[in-house]
Image (cartoon, rainbow, N blue to C red; front, side):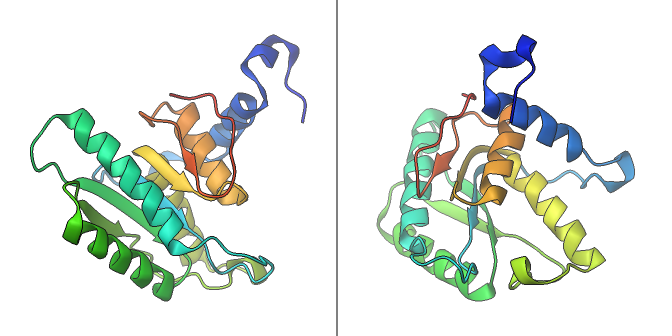
Length: 190
């Protein structure tokens, strides 16, 4: 966990982001095709059975709605709809997030359009078994999409969410600092 002396002033987060970006840079044939850039990306994780007190879905949605408002106000357009890329661990989690955002949209002047992850194979219990080749490709594709947004919302006690934040910050894709739903986290990007 040491940073080379010449980069010490930039901090450990910056150094880890550089390393992660290099490691996760896919070879040209593996890069995902062009897709829409999202205003907000959100990684919701509830399948960790070791977690004693999971973060409620409504907490994620509350942070996403704050992000949507920021982006909509910054756009200056009337009726601006914020796009949200959603990656979850189970279909039930995905459904609960989509339902919560539909409730938000019914009463908000800042609507959110949800685009769920289109995984070829749904990952359930990912921490306890080996991944198929298709799952591995889906994971890398989702990581890339999550890091390619104006703002990211995730649980930073999760290594995956920290990795997404690092990838988005080092590539300068995020226009706003990533948001954690469970703890404050120092980042060195916008």
